[in-house]
Image 1 (cartoon, helix red, strand yellow):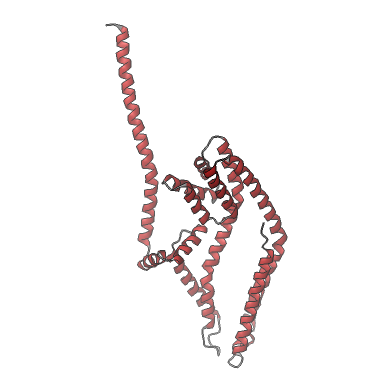
Image 2 (tube, one colour; image 1 turned 45 degrees about the vertical axis):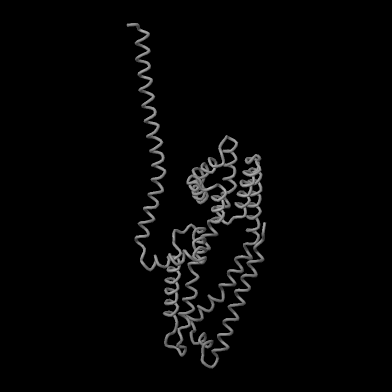
Length: 326
């Protein structure tokens, strides 16, 4: 038999076999990639279902009622901004438990054998305890927002370098989610996941802005949306915005240093009446109980309320003086 014919037969057979193997391997790899992507979301759903199974019937009922109301949506938005993995019902339950605990402490520290039998101190402690989780959430929001704003300029530089290297906008965001530290990596990872699930880019960025209410981020998202509609060099736009944000962060840092004395003075002056009242309550309790004697109760309570209102007003005035917009 002709050697060329043998070479053609064996070569053609080998090429067909390799082609079949390549098609099978490619199909399996694509299927495994899709299964891997879907598996991550299925695992997250299973984790959420397990968490839901561990909740109490009262918590489920409260969560269902809050999810249907605008108040529940506001609570969920506040918790998302603070990056707290709590449901609105769990947050309300935490507020009630904290209020009861602080109210009990105030009632236990008060003089229960005095001539003032109304548990006013327990009620005051309960009201103050209701605000403790809210103060904690606001503090977490402020800390997270500050970290996000500090990382925003570096994030823009990374996106600009990626866009100039030939990345698309989504690929540049994915690079940010892999290369940058939290919290900005977590937020952009969520944006990329939403876009992979089919959500439009403008909606995913709007969700990001709802979770991170930053003026600098609003400027960046507006620039990206405008560039997608009218065109232009997005890398140059983001580079200019990055320089603006860096200068704003620098000026804010200088202002923070100059106004720190006013801020801490306002905090100290607001807390000082509470400290003095607590010391007098422990050292000379009959003297403090003069505010609550039956003969002078009306005047004493009115004086305490007036002093509290003046302290709160002074604190907010000094805070507004130190709050300089840049």
